[in-house]
Image 1 (cartoon, rainbow, N blue to C red):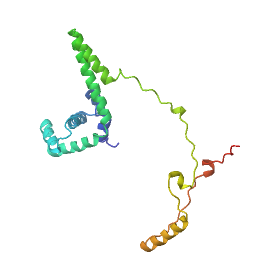
Image 2 (image 1 turned 180 degrees about the vertical axis):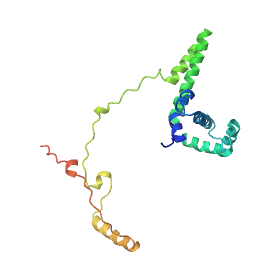
Image 3 (image 1 turned 30 degrees about the vertical axis):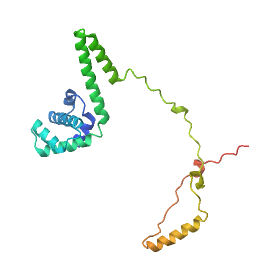
Image 4 (image 1 turned 90 degrees about the vertical axis):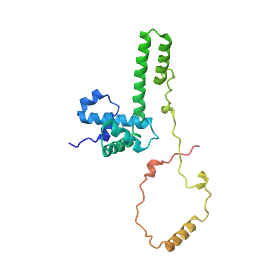
Length: 204
């Protein structure tokens, strides 16, 4: 059985809780995922810092060699564009938990003002105060009929009156300028035009 790549696991479980991760992967893999999560959050919080600063921070934080930190940095850079929405949901959930804890602390202190402020922030991040968007009536959208045409004026192109002569002259010119051009065999595409564009009776 092929070994699952760390990148694929991180893409799927970067923000899964550590307790759940330990039920799915070995402790060494989980520790690596938690380190990647820490690095990912650091990059989001310090987008303008150079790579050498990242390496310096995490060599000291995790007692890693330089090559190992650079390898992790490469992984994190691949993950950043993949996890944007997941990261937002993860941090939204963390903020909600913190606000809930603040609300409960205010409730224990019977601090009504703090309870209201926490409630407002919880409503803001969960968007419960925003009316749900109405579903678009896709079933009522009518597909516009299109009729094929060889008339270039329909798309704003001025027709060439002697187009066949122009094409022949251009072919002769290119044959002289680029002698390596070779004719190739081709087969006309079977567009099944009769089924795609069935004839319709003219309206009387």
